[in-house]
Image 1 (cartoon, rainbow, N blue to C red):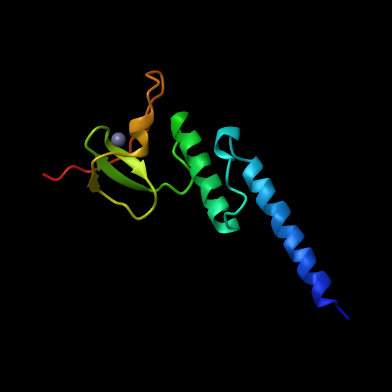
Image 2: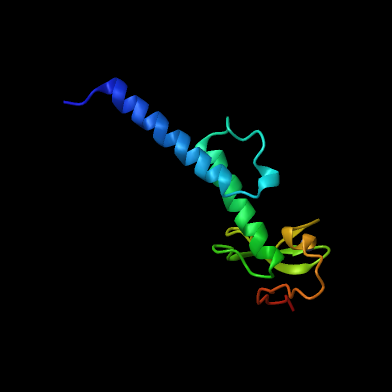
Length: 111
Ligand SMILES: [Zn+2]
């Protein structure tokens, strides 16, 4: 027979450890004030941080199968579901290292 109070304490402890693990997977400068965020928000923050790190290395993040036309960068990879829309800026705009090659989607031009 399970003890509901003990089960809740176990779940609370699991959530606390899970949240701390997520927070500590972020760069130190981003960790402040995140203790009260939900696990879902922390997971999203970790995902975005990983995607931005990929972009800074010139790599397309996993699952970025879409593409946009940035007014600064031209055609660039973007999250799924963004085929061909025009945008005023994109994550690739922040790649300032001139030695990093920005990968380009194969885009058919309208004739
Ligand atoms: Zn851009």
